[in-house]
Length: 143
Image (tube, rainbow, N blue to C red):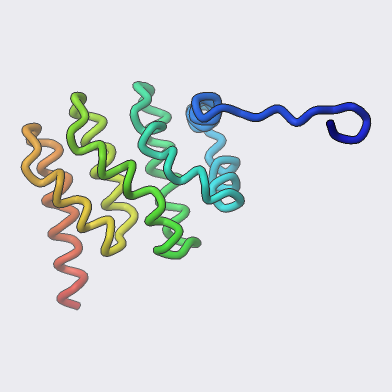
C-alpha cells in the first residue's frame, strides 16, 4: 500500500489498448504522443490498436506515427515493428493495409524489410500501399 492507504491499480493490456483507441477517436493524439514518448513499452501495442474498426482510431495511429518519426530514434520506432509485421496474415484486409501503412510511415530499414511480408497480399490496395512505399524508399536511396 502507498502512503495514505491508496493502492496503485495495474492497468491490463486490453484496458490500455482501449484507452489509446478511445483517446485517438476523440482526437487527443497529443496525449497519446506524450504517452509513447514517456513509455516505450506501449509501442508493441500499436498492432492491437490498429485492429480497431473505428476509422478515426486508425487515422489517429497514422498521425501518431507521423509525429513520432519527427522526434524519436529509429531504435525506438522499431519497437512497433514485430507487432505490425505480424499483421501481414490478418484476415481483414484493412488491418493488413493499415499495418503496411504504419511500417511505411516509420521509414526505417527494419520497417521496410518487414514490408516485404506484405508484398504478395491478395488485396490490390494493400499491394499498392507496399509498392508505393518501396518505390518511395528506392527514390530516396537514389538521391
